[in-house]
Image 1: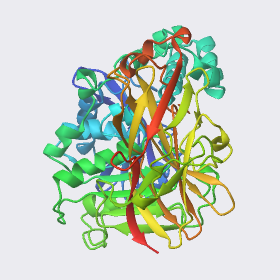
Image 2: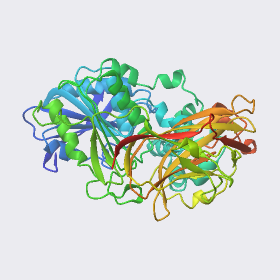
Image 3: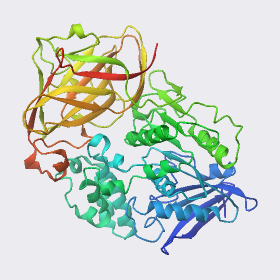
Image 4: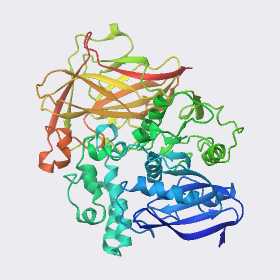
Length: 557
């Protein structure tokens, strides 16, 4: 049949090595000639084809590509049992080699897609199928542990995603009641996110997405997660990879980790092998001008559809004169400049500018407290009492996500320590992950120390920039210890008149799971409501025992 002025072949079977048939739709410019192949493997119904973020396959086919969109094992029309992540490497390898041998294929295959469709790329590429020439994994991770445990804490979004997967499995099984129940939970997730324990055997998940319990029952990076980390195998024999991320995307940590793995192991670029990273001002969905509730201007989309086609042209059509190799390896969107900026490398470590935390005669609790950020050691108040906050796990401090929302109202709460710097006289840019080092003490054993960074603007709003956490108090000795927090990366320009503000508290709920207090984090998934308790945390910053935050400076203005 013809659709959108291209040839479309529907329900085309591909037989896996174990005899299971997976089904795909194929889009062709014409039934003549030969074309490079673009392959997407996804679990949500192949008609969707990642069109929440990517151009429809008809557009790619009109650019001279044979496009294949396949339902992964056990999803859509494909046979077999769907176990998230587990069979994607072998099935991906088999599909790539099948696609390369199809009529009208020229034998070169590239893979594309975002989120789970990105996972299928990393999995397939880890086995090095000979016909796979390049990948464009977008908003995803080559190490699935970074999906489930960003910054070492379970991402509560995994629970809602599990119900999304369960919904589609229930529909496939004809279980309308379970399908509707999943939809209700997804539309109003607050009650489910607060339910404890995290590994509660919900009957719908137990039947239709039991993999969720594997994720939550393995809080530490163990053999289970090692089997779902495709980066080590990929970097042994890499192929060109174009990484696309979003500053507000919940999978940004995994996107950056994947690119850094290649930047560190393949530092020499050549026209025959190089990698690319671009990070836009986007949440997971959509990649738009007003993602996160702020107007980022007309350049916000980054022209990503044509950039991906250009990448494929270089590697699959041998268009080595299209200028791709000559461009910088990194491109990122600066929220305040409302512009894309280039960089030769992504910064691996913070560096360049450090602020010390300082108390005063006035307690540091809340934005009206007396705590300050200073770049001058002489301004530390050596006589100030340690700053103390109380974290009640039954009433966790909120963080709804990574969008650049205004936190000034939340910062009035006195369960938060708030450190504010002076307004900047000269502007400067930031690119990368801040690092926080805090001298801290926990009264009641293990708890979380959460750092949240905001930009205080002249009008009084405090725009979210970054978050990070670490566990403190594990030793149980009640003494002072150094706590290091590598925060979430961001890119911004601090303009004259703006200021830096740092919050220290005990949670960032529901974005990250709440620490129950008194129980080590590796056992928190079993905590019940009665286990939630109160933690008291003290923070000290004195000459010789400084607490500080360091930002990776990208340039003065």
